[in-house]
Length: 114
Image 1 (cartoon, one colour):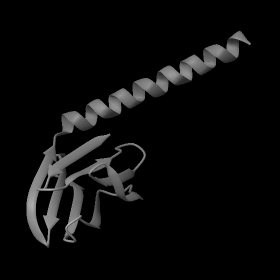
Image 2 (image 1 turned 120 degrees about the vertical axis):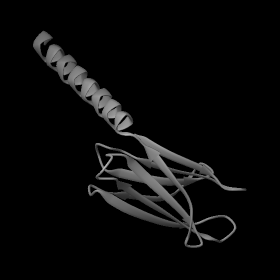
Image 3 (image 1 turned 180 degrees about the vertical axis):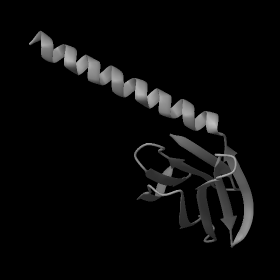
Image 4 (image 1 turned 120 degrees about the horizontal axis):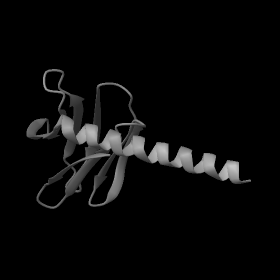
């Protein structure tokens, strides 16, 4: 799971993206305000903040650096661009693979015991 957080004056916004099942979610002050599945290299979420202003999240992978980038816009003005490196993505994938292998081996072991 990859997470991008940004603190506006009265709103804490967070975009969470699963790098293996494609689920993306946007939260404002802990409340989910947007959710979708995405298996492509980029996506976009548009929400309204508590003050009524539009906020847009653009999520994509930079092909030159393999970094995951989240651009946050408020009133169509770029506020910030947050990056997570390839190491975070690879670590998350390795952890997921380990859990899947452990679960598969455990299940197989349980079947053999029966």
